[in-house]
Image (cartoon, rainbow, N blue to C red; front, side, top):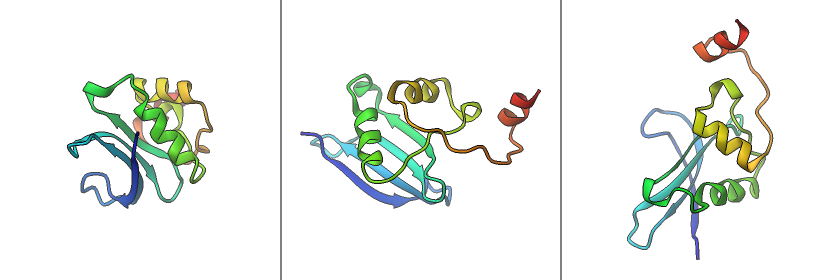
Length: 110
């Protein structure tokens, strides 16, 4: 049985505020994690250990998160290729656009 835990915290010491869903193996090793911003409920990162990719852990975390609150995918220009594939695979809404001066947004406007 898959056990998913939740907590809040930053992203590896960056000072941000996130809701975090995680699952660990029986030895306590991290298998997968999902970070969602506390302010916009935007997915900031989803990661699955290489040994467990393709086993449904990312989807399970996403479904657990969406069962607790509205969760939004990042704008397409902010997604990695893997993040975009994940968003397309699980479906769900994308966060509303916001003013941004990052390279990805500048590139989309050109």
